[in-house]
Length: 259
Length: 248
Image (tube, rainbow over all chains, first blue to last red; front, side, top):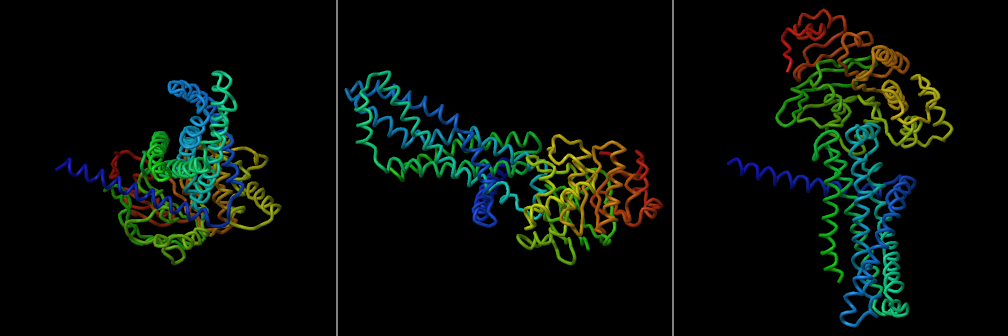
């Protein structure tokens, strides 16, 4: 009987947490559109999530593009199609690698920090203090971060796309003797507007996922992750793992719809 | 102003509050005393609506705060100021910004007036020339003073103090007690002080409610409590190991 009880408890706890997640998401959505708006706080968060992730995004994009250039050249050469390298690099980055890798990088750099920051505010009673001042913590702490993520992550994806394609160009044209005209020409012929915006639709969903999951884990760190520093540490780890896995899972579903 | 009726709260089958009944006198300093872990902070969080009870009522000026949500809850909370055990200052803001925060967010006062009121409130609690410092750069006593200034900036009718002297040296304890006393007498608010600083805290209290094992075991003026023939009260006041209170 005990194992059935334990199973039941686990299922109930899972459902309860899932329900709380969605209630949290609806509350965030409600507070985002409730005045007074806090543009300065949103700008601060855009600086934190967007500007301060720029270096890691540019670095990752450059090397991803270069590796794609080298690997793509090696594969295409077997079929005598080196001339299609530009198209292969651009389509891979715009449709798939740009949104996914940019989202994973932001999760590691900013998502973990968001979960830890809100978790510390929870355990040090700062969120309670806001409530006692008749200020809702979701409006003052969570909503600006979600808005900033939804603005920043698609922009970071755009930068990833440009730098990644440039990386592929450098590897293909400068190091492997692919003709510049062939690289750009094949890209121009193959890439359609739909390839560009489908990447941005993905990055919008990823931004929502990252900010929702990371803010939730921090906000409820005392309820679901344990108490004190250990609770915050657990919440941060859970946030990063869950956001990363969800990015990959949702990538499949969004791709299936958009393809 | 504050009336508690049959308030019950449990956490994972552990009954923390077992049906509390009492009233807090208006315009006075009321102490809620009892051993660590007896439910004092939980009670305070119910009074300000941060926790919902399993049953019972917390009447604030006749309205049950446990049954309201959203805007109505915020309206009732505007009557309150609260000093947390850890001061709970927003650590990304400096001292000035912390104290000015409620004014900036909840009023449309011009910057000059916000500045003037904030500096006056800081001066009232003895913080001068430290407006630019961050909470992590302050001592425990200073953090509590800043927390008190923030709690008072909106001129609340009720101020709650959650163990305001925990972790402070004896001199700073005395200073904070004195500050609470002077502040209450100056602004005339209803103050509720949760503490286990016995007997030091008695000096500033007008009325005391003692909790033990989730129940009110005694209430009255400090002199009444000190003369109480309840062995639980006597053991607690004298800090004796032997008696009905078992150390677990």
